[in-house]
Amino acid sequence: MGNPGGVGMCKKTRVSLFTVLAVMFLTSCSQLERRRSSKGVRGVIDSQQGVTFDQSNQGEELPAEELEAKEPLPPPKVGLILGPGGINTFAHLGVIKELSESKVPIDMIVGIEWGALVGALYASTGQIHKAQWEIYKLKDSDLPQKSMFSKKLTAQKVHQVLKKFSFKNIKANVQFSCPSQLIYSGSLKWQKGHSLYDNTKRCMAFPPALESEGGWVAQPFSLKQSIDYLRSRGAQIIIISNVLGNSDILDRSVVKENVSAAVMWNQVRNTYNEFLQPENLKALGYKDVFVVHSSSIKGQIYDFSKRKTMALKGQRAARPVVAAIIEQFGF
Image (cartoon, rainbow, N blue to C red; front, side, top):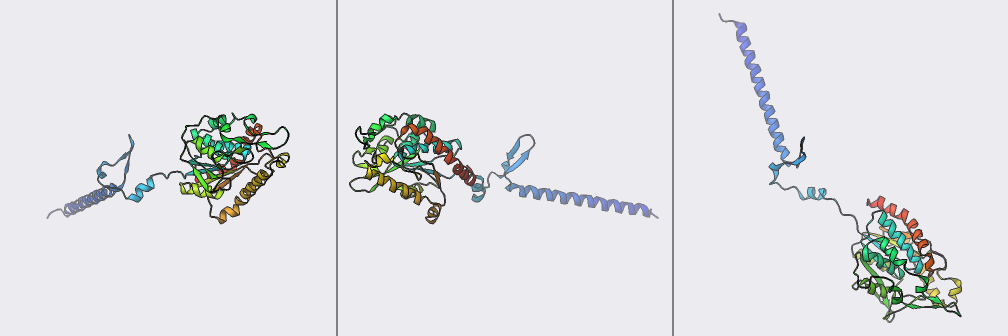
């Protein structure tokens, strides 16, 4: 008789061998399946070279939605409105400086009345320190002076003020526009197609300081139109720098001799302060409009010895507003 124990041993060996082969087969299938499924993976970790790209999948295109998800979204476009206010508009320099130091880009600017001068000087280079250097050239002697025998201001021609600046034939480095009106019709006209000098010249004149040239004067009652204009140009965030405050704009000794101008300036100030109330902006649907209120210098609308003081006031007033914009939009 044969050895039954040997037969049993052979059977066990064959079973064990079969089991091992089956396990190996299943393992190979599993690895093959994983390799097939990995064709959709774009990157493979390499211990020597970091992340490399799977060359076996070059012929396959990724879904458009996956590609779009990979591309970083561009930052929202920022539009800046620099309101009117004579010497008080130098506070706009501080607002621009705070935006620049906080790395919040300014894509387009609207300047109103003397805000047009500040905006044009910045737009000429896109550099705030150069704009400051230029505008600090102005002296009291360059501006309207009081008559020897009265408090009435003798208005200057706009070009007499602008001759101080070196931007006569310069095109804007930053998109710049300013609203003006013809005294004959009163219709609003956006100045944007000429040189910065010509645009500013048509947008600055306003009593009692500057006389109209060619029939063009500033259009200070254009705040809503300015917001809508920037929106139409693609601005998604709009910052308004308001420098009129609540104090007297003209010195009371000057008001008696410049009554019409005083009435007009008071109307401009009241219009701005009413329009810029948060509840009014919300009712108009201006959700992404931010307002910087810089306190004005009482009655010193044309005292240029205060220009550096106003610039500092503007920067201080802008800090919390700029911080809120950065937190909300992630600049």
